[in-house]
Image 1 (cartoon, one colour):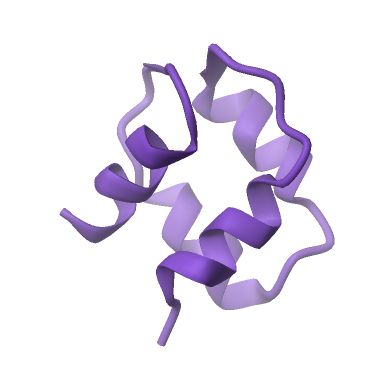
Image 2 (cartoon, one colour; image 1 turned 45 degrees about the vertical axis):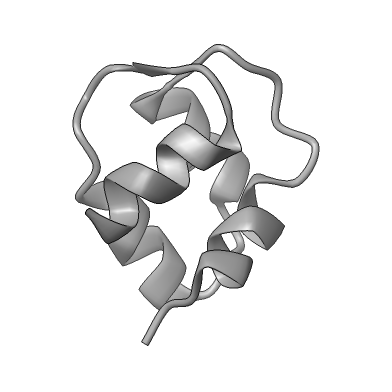
Amino acid sequence: MVSPIDIQKALKGMDYPASKEQILEHAKGSDEEVLDALGKIDDREYEGPSGVSAAVFD
C-alpha cells in the first residue's frame, strides 16, 4: 500500500504548478505502486505536493 510519504518522496524537487504528465515524468523510477497511484489522479494542473497527495488519497 502506498503511503503519503511515498508520494512526497516521488515528488521531491518537483516544480509547481505541474500537470499530471509532468508529475508522472518526474516520478519515473519510483516504486511501481507509487506510479500506479499517480497514474490514477485527475488530468489537471496541481499547485503543490499536498494537492497531488489529496488527489491520490481522496
